[in-house]
Length: 314
Image (cartoon, rainbow, N blue to C red; front, side, top):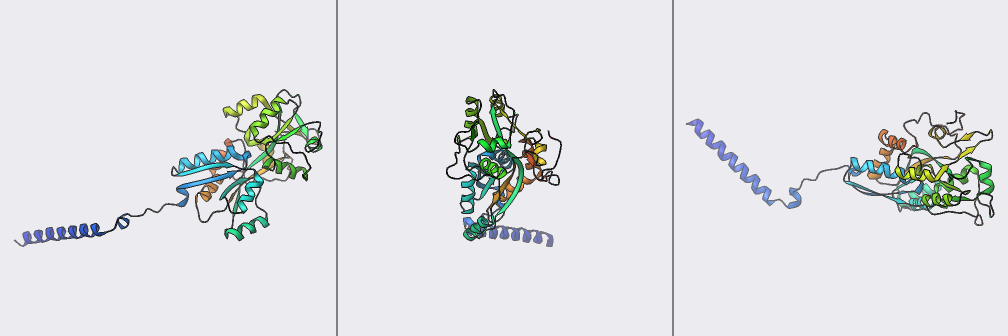
């Protein structure tokens, strides 16, 4: 008898508890009934990465893999000439940038004054400015002196054409050759690397100036078609050696027009920009750099010494 009473009591107690919980749940607001799921900020949302056109292929390859890992992230690649992109960045207008140089101290201070955010730069790869010409042009190499003698002349013996003025290629060449370009200097630019390729194919003796990343991925069908039209010129050194923009020659600073690729970040907290930047420097990200036929910066960090080491040319 006592046992039966106990079972009945337990049943009543359970019923009352269930009723009270149900009643309490029904009185909760919809907002209270939803339990928020905390997610890391780099796992969802939208981001626009601004890149110098020379680095578009690399940026797109990295972005494609990142959004595979994080399907709720959408990344857009926006092309903008390096000088303008850097100005927009230190004016606080864009959060993430891929260019060939970091901010100067004055630019960093300007950005901080506007946003109170300390920007972070990360080197992720070594790239190069390269010189291309028609496959029908008999020359296979040029000297730095030939470039200096003709680059900004009014009546050059060889016509040089850029992809863009004030681009990463423009900055790299002027820095490496120690050239000051004034307002009267003649700068010929086509607008895109593709137009440079078309131009030098039609003008057989002209030489185009583009980024290595445009032609580095030789298994890309588009690049294969480009290389049917144009060839990459070597640079002749003082001893007559032909130096090609190969990975070993970038790695040891032998190719004279190498450059670093930087990601600049201006973001509060660890958002998509930080996640993308970290991914680009990770082993997987650096393997994508290798797949693009560029020199990874972090996988071989101990070996990357930009100090003109005398290594065998390849």
